[in-house]
Length: 389
Ligand SMILES: Cc1cc2nc3c(=O)[nH]c(=O)nc-3n(C[C@H](O)[C@H](O)[C@H](O)COP(=O)(O)OP(=O)(O)OC[C@H]3O[C@@H](n4cnc5c(N)ncnc54)[C@H](O)[C@@H]3O)c2cc1C
Image (tube, rainbow, N blue to C red; front, top):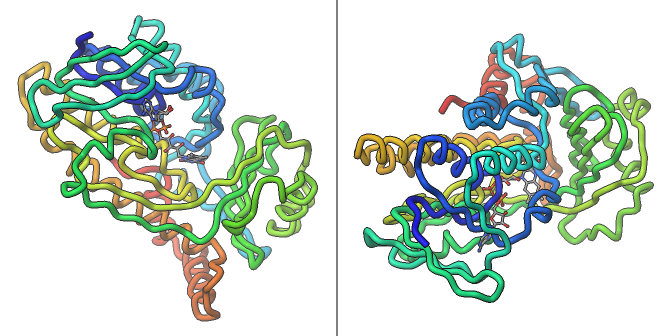
């Protein structure tokens, strides 16, 4: 088999890259380890920056998002009972779109099908070869048969546990990591969201987030110790704990119901540098992980694809490698800004097991400063709604 760009991973970053390249006449093959149903069953991100919205439109995959997604012009921050609305539309004239990652992925698959793109599912043993040469290869198996794909470039869009990042020699990679001493227990329920917009709540019992996917699908999270297991949390215990961490008037309005998904995700920040080695480019979670607090994971995957697709299109259309040569540096500059925002929001809103009274006062002062200062709110809103590409 032969193609121009081999894409490892059929999550949002791999599918979006394939879609944008195909629409510019560049041939791709996507290799995905799991079945399509499995990929579409994963419940993950839900808040899209406006740059992400525009990228999906540009890819021809934005129609259902525009029809069914909810535009939010603000969100709420709460602390020990006090709550205020951060109005990013009034501050900056900018919005975010609430539309689930599952739906984004579904729309990208539909767009890829419509243009006859090649996506191979349930491939195993993917290995990358000769990445430092002009003739890289990807070997894999499917239905017990061995295959080889030759290409010009490989895009590693295979998430944190994929094969692409470890294919870069260890002595070349510089990895930065911060692991937080807690996780998020998330519950999805077929209930109306407690408020039209998201609520980020700091509380002595731990952080809580009220989010949503649509008017009858709510996503709630609470901070839990890393030692907790999903089995420790009955639905009733979850709802009681969530209510205890929310302002009383919000808790009174909370509609509870049976959970349809419940999971615990640990929180970490991770970045690998560089994001290019020879013919290999790393994109999305393959190169970086943010704690979900700032809603940046999916959005960063999309901004990586913006820079890489632009560079590859420039290379194939004009023979100019400037865009692909600058890819790692351009993507990392934006990634570190999002890392800083996600880290600062996580630090401000969570209870750390080893924090002192002084640390807690610093958290309170941070939040009070944000409530009081319009200048601080502008900076926050600029980061939350998404920095420019
Ligand atoms: C539990 C969870 C909750 C999250 N919640 C949020 C949130 O609320 N907000 C937010 O902004 N972000 C969230 N994220 C992050 C967000 O979902 C990711 O940033 C986003 O999925 C990144 O897209 P991606 O395509 O780079 O990686 P992925 O979505 O991980 O896709 C990678 C794909 O590669 C495939 N793959 C892996 N290894 C191989 C291989 N060896 N060969 C072939 N294919 C392979 C995988 O099956 C997968 O389909 C969450 C992530 C997780 C795990």
